[in-house]
Length: 96
Image 1 (cartoon, helix red, strand yellow):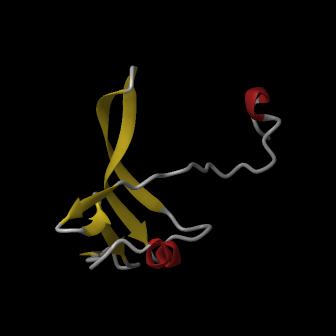
Image 2 (spheres, helix red, strand yellow):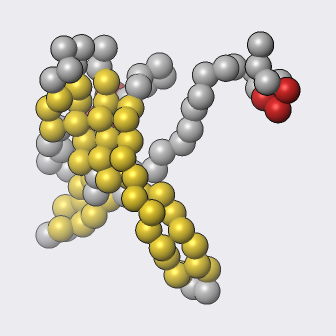
């Protein structure tokens, strides 16, 4: 049974939304975060993307997949709005 403050949640699985920034170098957009894939034996391999391709990344991350995300806190001041945002620096996608 869920604690009272979570009683209105229909599913007991934690979830969240993740935005991955892109950087442009020589007119080519790529992901700003390192992205790795870990297999069931625990071996991790860095994934190399030649271009920004949301469909390709979406095929790696689907419902029920675990992702370890390493974040940094970055401050921003944009058009008189200041704050702190979480920025993904590294993602490890578990493929098992």
